[in-house]
Amino acid sequence: MGQGPSTSALQQCIQGVANNRANFAAFAGSPLYQIQWVKPYNLDVSVEPAAVVRPETAQDISDIIKCANANGVKVQAKSGGHSYQNYGVGGSDGAVAIDMVNFQKFSMDTKTWYATIGAGNRLGEVDKKMHAQGGRAMAHGVCPGVGLGGHATIGGLGPMSRMWGSALDHIVEVEVVTADGKIQRASATQNEDLFWALRGSASGFGVITEFVVRTHPEPANVVQYEYTIKLGKQADVAPLYSKWQALMADPKLDRRFGSMFIMFPLGAIITGTFYGTQEEFLTTGIPNALPQDGNGHLVINDWLGGLAHDAEKEALYLSGLAMPFVSRSLAFKRQDLLGPEKIKDIFNWVDTQKKGTLLWFIIFDAAGGAIEDVPQNATAFAHRDKIMYYQSYGIGLPVTKTTKDFITGFHDQVVQKAGPGTWGTYPGYVNNALVDQQKQYWDSNLPALEQIKARWDPKDLFHNPGSVRPAKN
Image 1 (cartoon, helix red, strand yellow):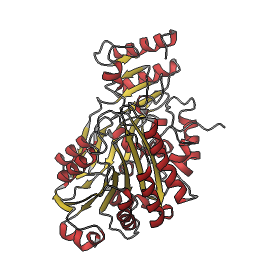
Image 2 (tube, rainbow, N blue to C red):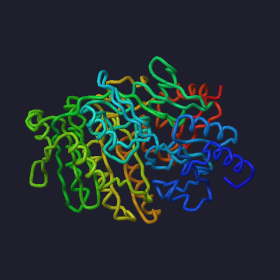
Image 3 (tube, rainbow, N blue to C red):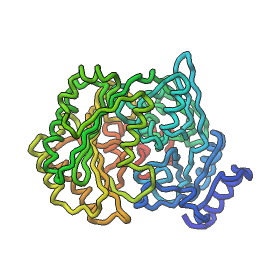
Image 4 (cartoon, helix red, strand yellow):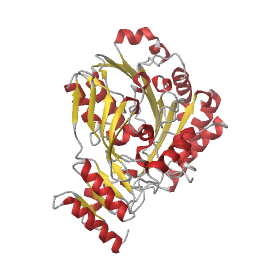
């Protein structure tokens, strides 16, 4: 956005909300604006918001939304700021980005064991606070720096999701500021349609300030498995992947077990997390289906130790640091899974390709279990029937065309080998290169979302390149 009258009016309006508070807002063109305020996660995606605001109260957010409305500017909220396409700062130039960093509230009701959590909390802090206030837990991903506000409103999947469901399945109520600037509550009994939409696609419907979530007693014991193979060729890894996929596809697989298969240059890693004792893990029979030679080992942990172990391993591949990268992903139904020969073909293809970088990896992540128990239309999150996801990453300084071609080519190989299917992907793995993004993210729930969007945000104030658009009635 340029420096014309509308920009000036927007800036004046936001400065009026700030009322001389320091560190409340910064505007395009300010010194160190990108480094200190915008803080893009994917440095390969250039975004310049008109303003970044760090409100302190829900009323601040209401007033900021009114400023944006008055000046015809789009709005997006940022919790942790880990969007692959920088959607938290608009995803494209000219938006008002609302940084939720000051919303750190946390309390635990020891009668219901419901936790009230500010949308600016990071997952690692949520774990510590829940542990300190009753030894409680909820399902979520493994990266501690990810913000709850975005994570819990697109799905929120992690190794405990097969046991407990997604993060958004734990939400019982929210406080949200809607497009008209009203501060509202939404739950199963209040603003029900909005509550449905917020659990899976919140970026297009409002700014959530706090969550009320149900919690579980944290498991006393965690067993973590890791197997590393370094063979030099992905073709040699293909049989191992086939066996792992067969285990993950077993409908009777113990829900206490979550696992990932990670391809990287010169080899692969299998990780697994079991929520229970080592004796219980052995009783499930799962270890018998996993490689057991000298390249594998078990680690016994408590709950927080297990979370730290998962975070440490994930950090080897998904750093919280900003960097330039390209990524693709896909969600698999059980019938979409590849057979051994097609797996071999794809892994052989990887060996033949130029990568353009030494920093690439492809993660296959097990899902299913408790996630499948919830009907597809119970929330906006549509991928209840998916039992596995893959996500690929190519990192470069800068990202070259060769790397982009490799990442895209792998995706095309998977789709071609799997054949016709109702393809979609997890809305946390956003990609502007997708054709019909919204259909990919929300599948059969999209028409209902578009109708709800038309009621709550008909002018599409809450907007990014992949968000839900209002129905054209």
